[in-house]
Image 1 (cartoon, rainbow, N blue to C red):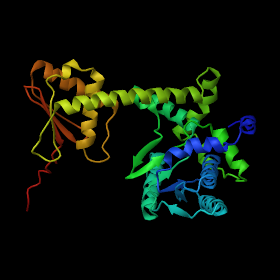
Image 2: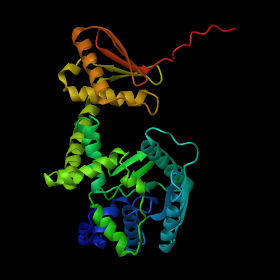
Image 3: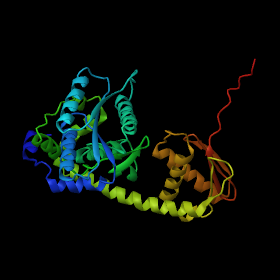
Image 4: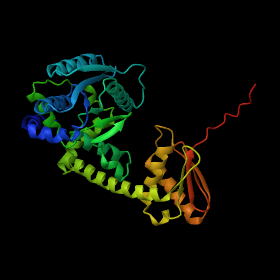
Length: 347
């Protein structure tokens, strides 16, 4: 973030904080995930001010995650504990124990972070975890997904609310500029810590971040990318609505637990995207937890299923831990893929 931009940014005003956080006032208790950076310190200051503005706001607590990747992280977490104490908020440091993977380290660290936060939220009776993801984070996410070959709906970016490990994840600041969160932290007298991984070119997000000024010079700035994400989210909602209608119409009873049976005889009248998303939804329902497939694979499956239905032919195909069968009369059956036998003859 350029120094001039940070200096020009205004801290969030009281009415803005209410507008951003009041939609989450139904949560009895919120765990604020604070790393100690300017973004999360700005979030911490905003939540603390919300509590001062409205004594009926949810109870708050704070957690910071030490991933065990840098020796400085312990002191950074201690800084977060001190900041939370200034606002009178209970806080805890959560540690990622065990061996760390050599590949996809950031992805593994992110997964560990959400798991630790969700476990701690349950331990302290918090119903949601708040993160400081902001407008620039949203823009970077859209670009990362574009680079990885995501389809249009993958460009919807992060949601303001989602669920992870059984706990609600709140992202109230997705439309707020990073510089304004930093200004909010500074106005509260919070001095952020610097995580050197934010400048490490080994990580895709860092390399994407370095491209942002070049794209902004051509008119594709963070705000426009965030607007794109919002528009894609509206398209996703419309598609999900239509998929739900088709699912209600075509789903048939199944006597086998964990198996979805559908009548696909009229799927040829639906847009391809509807069939693709319907199959993706069913795969997520049937397949083992955590199984994921690339968009191209689900597109290929949808094409194969539609061709089988159109030709009145049977089909058997496996994908994402599921067995997909199409009968000659257009019945589509999705079940958990059977375990393969090892072929070993018992002694």
